[in-house]
Length: 140
Image 1 (tube, rainbow, N blue to C red):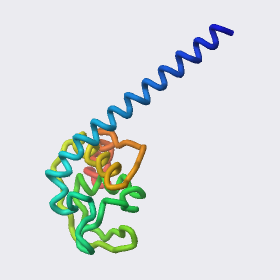
Image 2 (image 1 turned 30 degrees about the vertical axis):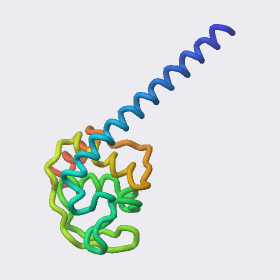
Image 3 (image 1 turned 135 degrees about the vertical axis):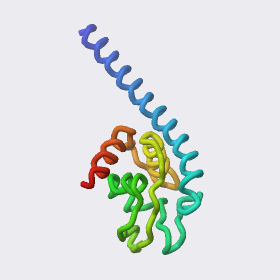
Image 4 (image 1 turned 45 degrees about the horizontal axis):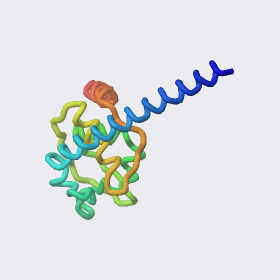
């Protein structure tokens, strides 16, 4: 019985350490993503993520962002040219591709998904960005 209790305690502590490491990694990614966002994205989407009226969609409280993760990553990587609907408003302006590394895209996605009232516990990794990059660079 004591061995089982000790084993359960050790497993609990290890899982707790893993969660803490993930939170530190997410916080680090968000911090890096903020820097990328301010340099590359804020000029259009604004520092507060509210966009520019009916011309440029908001990222703050954006239903599109949360319901279309792959398309959001693809938009950063390759630009956006088709109509999209964000919070009930149709946007039909082109967005140019942004030259960023996979890690920078993951970081900026983690930042915008966790800023201005947004909250998403599912992080974006550089390997997920790489998958999207490969999938859509082949014309799929």
